[in-house]
Image (cartoon, rainbow, N blue to C red):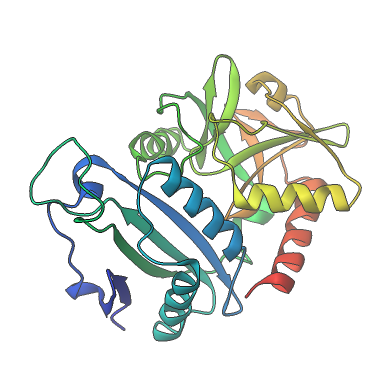
Length: 286
């Protein structure tokens, strides 16, 4: 089946979708994005993703192409047209296509923002990786300073993924000033003596929607949470480690830079948090 995608007001077959060569997302990575998971034909944490999108657009002084209500309708129409019951919906907003390439922002009243969405059908709830865990390497964090804005500037995270692949691992954790910031596309956590430890929110990490939900569920389950930076050495000596993201939910980490974490197998805290997150998110999905 030819996937149907959304491009600036139109639902079209993917092989007919077109964006201008002058689109600033293509020329300058001048755009933001969101990924919303779909389970049982429903959207998970849609409101959180919509709020973060609104914030990202505001931080970049970029005009919203549609309202939140219109965006929800587009998501639902895409799900229906592609018969999507499990997977993800990718959304991207750019500053649009000016008449020519120019570093200066175009006049938003004359050049509308571009909006693109597409679906990705994928089994995400029963991921085999959740049963065996992931292996990560550490790399220097060389991204720009405003990581709290979910921009499409993903070249270095992509390079980090490839560094991990070359090392026979699954992902990379980025390190700055001696402490872990986050994974290439996820937030990072360790567990020590029953305490969940994760980096505090700032401009240095993405304010993960899944992160917020998982920490809320953890506290409701009477788990102790500490938001602070930690080192790779501290992570290697932890009892457990895991990541969170919209596409992986809660995923255990069993090895860091060749050193086993805990017993080298997924631990009970990550397993329990994944179970709680899936149960609770299914209840609130729309």
